[in-house]
Length: 439
Ligand code: TTP
Ligand code: MG
Ligand code: MG
Image 1: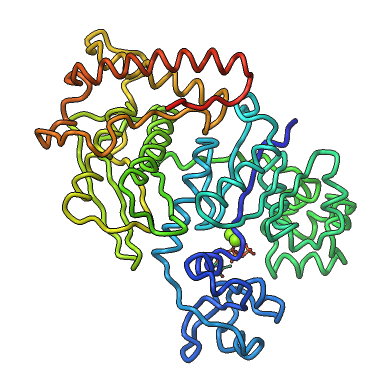
Image 2: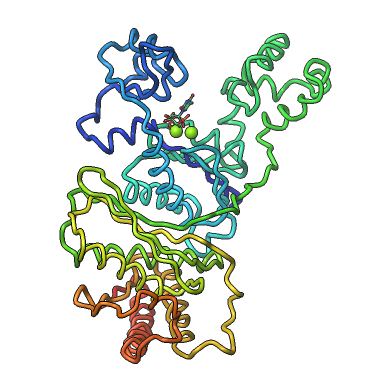
């Protein structure tokens, strides 16, 4: 299947975030934007307000005239950026080939991921579900052989849509659409097309290229190709990723430290796995903690050496959590872990000089990665045997020691885990399905 480009666009993004943070707003007409008494404009209108003709970029005063019962909300940029990061974190769980287009949309190149995740359409459904689970929001997805068609597709069944355009359905889908749907057709180009009596994509496709060139000059070929569903722009990933993170907002504030540790362990495993997928190591581990009243704090630790080893990142993260809990525990609305100061790992190969403990930890990680790749994310998780009773670390710099100084106890536990994983792999093979860690 050559439909390997996915375009994801969040539905009524700013309004959806407002509904997420205050469910009483659900089902109501909302206008998020500037002050109606000034010359503020609408950034987005909720779908309920769109029924009245309100839309982005419309003066707020006009939108309120169209829909006087609308609830007008100011723009909370920091919050939209935060949720946007959660959404992009979800994308990164499926592919490193992500081209961000704006705060609420991106192209994902899924070529070559079928072996890992199955058919692209199925992966797109998983992405939608993961965005719902991890960010609490709905989005619309387009799947197609190229960027132009994928973006067009994501818009066709909004909200909560999933539209596939294959090479067989290109003309059926494109032909009836107005030419304004073509990438790059603004008011000026539309006027030129009007002179040729071209209003739909079908009319454009059937016009001889020579005639188009006479009127439109150099851009004729660009539009002609688009009308035929052709676009050879590559997905250009933003390779300047500066952080990898995972966070979760709880439906009810969490007040059990064991429960928080369990969530953090899951998050840390995902973050470390993604680091390894990107062949990156990180030097700084940061926890983000948000209380019920939205007070948000962070706690960071910088490691002596960059690492991609789950066990080391987990020790740093769990210790930060414990230190915070000991000094200023509050029930949490949100918990997250992010790694920063990223740099390329020193090659996948293990160094001759690496300690045997470190080598074991890396082998453990690659065994876990293999299971997750084969059986999915929920297939296996590390046990948090130490729980919150874990002895407090003696020196602040403990994590700077990397795996070389992992204690005998940890080594034994690692060995036990390795054996259990080997068991699980066997069980997995037998059941030919997802395996669950037994403790
Ligand atoms: P869009 O994806 O264009 O719109 P949307 O997500 O609100 O709605 P849709 O379901 O149709 O995708 O833009 C994303 C966000 O960007 C939007 O919520 C608010 C902001 N935005 C502006 O601030 N000004 C604008 O003119 C537009 C178009 C968007
Ligand atoms: Mg959107
Ligand atoms: Mg958008």
